Each structure stands twice: as C-alpha cells, then as structure tokens.
Amino acid sequence: MARFAEALAAGLLAGCAHLAPQPRYEIVGYYAGWKGAVEVDPALLTVVNYAFLDICWDGVHGNPAVERHLPCEGANGAMVLDNPAGDGEQLARLAALKATNPRLRLVGSVGGWTRSNRFSDMAASPATRAAFIVSAVAFVRRHHFDGVDIDWEYPGAIGVPCAAGFTCERAEDKRNFVALARELRAALDSAGAADGRHYLATIAAGCDRSFVIDNLEPAWIARLSASLDWINLMTYDYHGTWETRAGMVAPLGNDALDPAGTNIEATVKLYIDAGVPPRSLTLGLPFYGKGWIGCEAGPRGDGLYQQCTASVSDPREATYSYSMLRTQGYLIEGLAGRGFARHWSAAAQGPYLYNPASRTFIAYDDEDSVRGKMRYLVRQGLRGAMYWEIALDNGSELARVVSGELPH
Image (tube, rainbow, N blue to C red; front, side, top):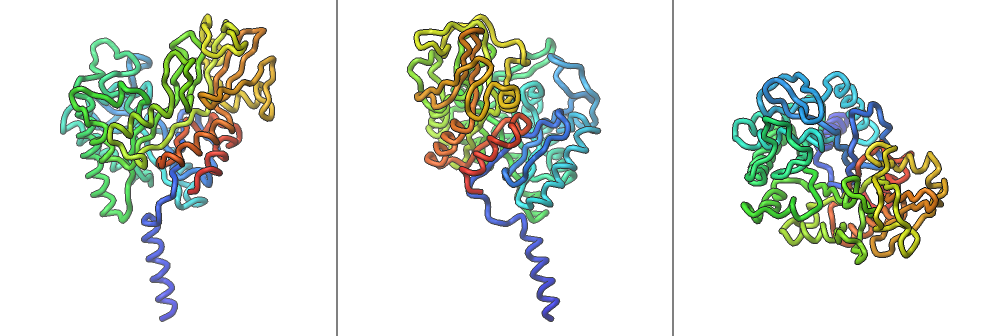
C-alpha cells in the first residue's frame, strides 16, 4: 500500500509539473536558430524564444524583397520551419534543456524583421488564420514546446519594403491582429486543457506611438493584450543605422538634449496609458550596440547627439555585439580600450564610447545599464525582461545580471 501511495504521489507530481507556480518575473531570451548551436544556460531564463519560424503561402515561404522563395508544405497561412533540416536539430537541443531545468519553457517565434511579409495576408481572413493556428498547435505538440510568439514587424506599416506585386500591409491589420490573437488563445487553451498544461501566447511589439495607436481601432492594443500572456516590448533601436546623428540605442530615461525625445520610460507609459496592464509587459534589452563614424566631438567632447558622416560599415549593419565589444578590446573589465573613452549619460542612464582620433561613436548596454533597467521594471511592476539575443552576450555576462536582479 505504501509503494502504491508513493507511486500515485509521483504520478500526480509529474502530471502537475506544468501547473507549478509561475515565476515571479519572466526572463525571455531569443535564440537565433540560423546561427547554429548556441550555448544556453537554462538556469538564467524562464523562456527561450526560438527565432524564427515562417508562414507558407502558395507552396513557398521567405520574403522575395530580400531573398529567394523557399519551398514549403502546408495550407496558405500555415506556420512552417524556416530550415527544416537545421531547425529540427536545434529544436531537439532546446527541448533537452528541460532535463536541466524542468521549469524552462520553449516558445516558437514566427516572423521577425525579414519574415513579416505574409502576416497581413494570413491575418486577413478566418480561413488563413485557422490554418496558422492549427499549424501552431501542431508545432508546440510535435516539438514539446510551450507556446507561440508572434513577431509581426509591423501591422499596418511593414518594416522591410514589400516586393512588387505583393501586399504586406493593410489599414485593418491591427483589427485583424486582435482577431488572430483571440482565436489563437482559444485554440491554445483548448489544446492545453486536453494536454493538462498552459500554452503561452506572446508577441514582440514596437516601442513607438505608430505601433500602439490606431485610428480605426483606438483600443486595439488593450484588446490584443487581453488574449496574450504578455507582450515583449522591443525597447531598443531608438537610434540606429537609418540616421547619421549619434544617439543611444536603448535610453532608459529622457535626455532633453536628444532630438528624438524617445526613451524606454515613455514607451512603457504609452502602453500602460493605452490600457495594457504592467504585468502584461516585459522590457526588451539589446545585447548589442550601434556605431557611427565621422562624428563631431561636440561641446562636451563625447560625440553624443552630434552629426556623423555615416554609420559604421564594419561590423555589418553597424552592430557591435556585447561579446565583440568585450573580446575585441573595446571594453576591458568595464574600461574602454582601442583609443575609446567610456562615457555615461545620467539622463538616459546608459553608457557610450567615443574615439576622438577616429571620431567613432558606439552606443551600447553594459552591466551597469542593464542593472538599472532591471530595477526600473521591478519598480514599475512589469512582468519581466526580454533580450535580443542569447548569442550576442559574452559568456552570459549580461544574462547573469538580469537573472541576479529578477527572482524567478
């Protein structure tokens, strides 16, 4: 009888594993599948978002504006693997991490900057939304995942210009996004009830007014969030390669000297004022910086907000991973190298580098700025943190700061 009771208790515990208390704070890290095997410390995360999955249409997927079409199998609107051979191996590797941390959850993220071109078509009709949802449920079950993340960049205002002859945005995109999220939520809840677990539905969201505000559906973002577990705010790229004035990539606070006048605190307030509860928001962190060349020193001699001739051509897209900054001598144990001086913006609450000889400016996040952002999100009562992306860190240096600041 005792053995029977022990076995019954063990079975009940196993069956209730997915009903365990939720972490106090979520820590979401994006995993770029196209980079191949990337080391992940499962103890530092609550969720890994596998990026990116795509949408099948007329037997092909991919964005013809930037790449050739790739073959796929599935109904129009179906969610598909981007690289079936490589993705399958990566998904299996991630699933194996649960043996180390059974509380870790895995989420498939669909879309992204170059793969958002079919969202408008898919969300526009009940039939194609249904095809997406059926395939999404099948994906999480097949690969032992825990949910789906939609990274639509952006509804009503596509980021990558659409290829000729295609439709990548519609005025009613945000209204259709609300319907898609509602129907996805219902399907995941139904599957979860059958499987004895809760499946996650999340999105990645833009950080400016053009994403949050919609004249056709003024309350759309609040209605959308009601169907989601949370929204991953992409609170970065406030300044970048599309401009020739040096600026902070992810400023926390407002700096009156910043011509753009945008920052993380303003973004969070924008969402909350629009009706999104604080606990429905995770704060996005960039594990990278951006650089400009030919930047005037300016009155303070540090290049900040000064006119430059261009963004840096090397590295690609002027993107300095935090790992690159650390391993190539730009940052040496918190100090600057290679002719750069490290500066700190008290207003924006972030660091930047300036080399007066080469007139090169680099804005980035480090342990100090990440720690400040974690304390800010705790004060604001947010759901947690998200970062792009795991491979850009330097031996989990920034990830350990996030994990150390957020009980999970």
